[in-house]
Length: 315
Image (cartoon, rainbow, N blue to C red; front, side, top):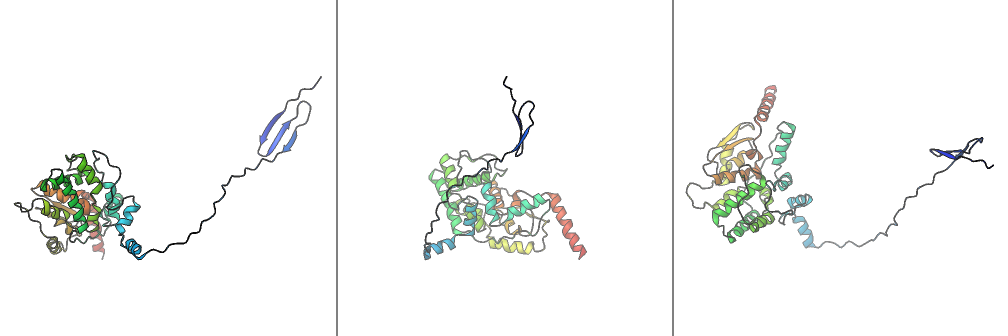
């Protein structure tokens, strides 16, 4: 009678134990596992090409590219070219994603503000801004936006008012509770054309220029104070102003007085009888003075006062 054998295998690492059946001693075999050889793609031959030297025109064009353009391209935004992701209606705050990176490579005011809030401590010094005359590139950009609205039936101050409302909606300002009532054509044109990076690159009171050029020109009760005069007044009145001390402009207009004062104070206030002027001042705040539209909490200003006065007392 043929003996029935039961074979069982127990694997443990590289050693296999074989049960050879009834009345037979188990046999131990050492089995080498197969090595896995990775499949490597055959490398392609390296192509060596001669570098063509740049022409003088190309060298000048590369050197002329501003830091703003280089950094904006790094963040996925090309200065002066259409922005992607258009939809109608545009969501509130859609411009903020461009505001933060552009601020970082220009004024660094929003970076300073965010760092202070996150650290729960105001980190001095205040980033200084030298305000000058509006740049021609920025004025041209604003003019194109206003002229396009005029071609669709919105003239002068009405076009300016709608553009300011559109900018405030884009920055997510709470005073602009709903998007401006404009056509899809104007909305899309402004989204692809408007470039506030040109204004942040050359800080100035662009709202005063725009209102003087297209709206309120010659109107009663409003005349823009030249920014150099505002700078001189601020230097005189705020010479000894501490960062936590408040600066108030009761007739704020476009915020021309508060712009140079922002180099001294983190506690700015203003009011005006005209809602148009308040909107203009808010836009200047979003561009250049974050604590004008988002005031620092009082406890942070008090903490800063205690720290600075404590340092002076220990001297």
